[in-house]
Length: 128
Image 1 (tube, helix red, strand yellow):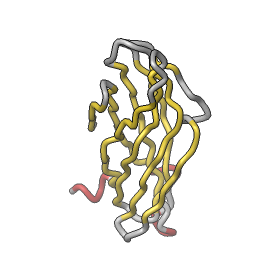
Image 2 (tube, rainbow, N blue to C red; image 1 turned 45 degrees about the horizontal axis):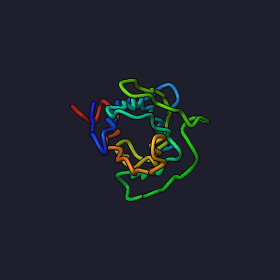
Image 3 (cartoon, helix red, strand yellow; image 1 turned 45 degrees about the vertical axis):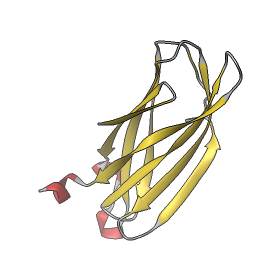
């Protein structure tokens, strides 16, 4: 697991290879990831949007942007957290992801960019 705190918001990421949804013979690899967003501030925050960088070891770099996460724009109160699971397909057995969330401080309406730390996506057999 990797984690990073930005502007009082802690982002924790765990990734998991999904062998049953992958097809290595066709260079198709699916990785799931679970993200926990923990509000360490004294004010509520709302997750507005996401911006991802997805990089395969074969040099392919994709960017994905959109509103919220998994169809939601959660409000996270002080001291609480929000967790979701999503997935990304890759065309190589090693890759990485990183990015940012745009989060709004609901107390003063200030918008904050919170970093999503870089995490690796590696087929377990490659780690031997």
